[in-house]
Image (cartoon, rainbow, N blue to C red; front, side, top):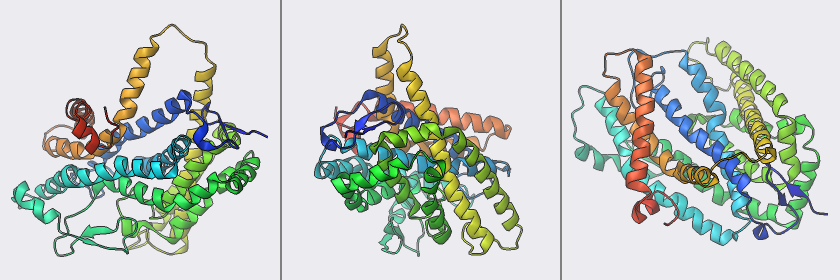
Length: 424
């Protein structure tokens, strides 16, 4: 019997070989919209980091404690959602590609921009951080060779490279996302291969048969919570505030979700319950964090006392529940968009805009944080209120990034290659 898969109004056949099915444009519209919203949301997130009390590349004086709550909420689901969407993209990509072709494409689309970004895009962030100290006067070109004093470190999985302790300058900054995505994509290749085989499809079928129960959907986040409790993010501080293995589960869950229509139906069915559960779990997480942080010298994200372990477990589950809610409401939007009667409009213009923004996501992600740091470095020195500084940084960074992308990246074959874009 044929089983169809639907995510946001998208359909596929589970028992038909994956590489033979076309990719419906409705699926692209919903997934690409979510990807674009998260990436553009990072402008507002990382601009806010300038004003929160935790360490970052550029800091305003004074800072605001209230931002910790808002940034903590966004960190609960934003980067995990990108990994889930990436996993869904893998599933759809493998419908028209073999694993070998897919692997070569992944290297071209991720490894090349990663190496280029670390060489060109990341170093200015670290130099500007150093320039924040009035006593630091080293020129950028003197600083740059020292930035590349690195060492291989197999214990720092999945990064594998780090700064020479004697220098302490090298870091991948926001490009950690590309490293982790690349490493876990290849490490999960045997699991992905298994899930594409008949026995793997049977496993997916059995899971989908139980997905109409809310507790089953929620329980998929339990392994994430357990990993967060067992492997805190101290070794990977700055990587979205998550532990080193959790993103692998988010990526794998994203791969599985489009494989059977019942997963999509479950997300749609449980979206409101997931929203309520997300609010409750985030409040509990925040309460535990507040209680545990009252202890002298407490570090809730690394300590192994009962409160810290419970807090990290609940936060991991909460992150997954929020993703279920977001995908469920996105599915509802996709269904309404699919069912709505056609209105008089210019479909060519809309499709061109969607294609333009979808293609821009990876280059914008690579560029955005360095531009925010550079703009923020200048703006924090202005004698205006913090809210106005924040708005200036956000809006200027978006405009500058889009201009650089449009003028210097998308129109040139070499720059398109360096930023992981498809050839012209």
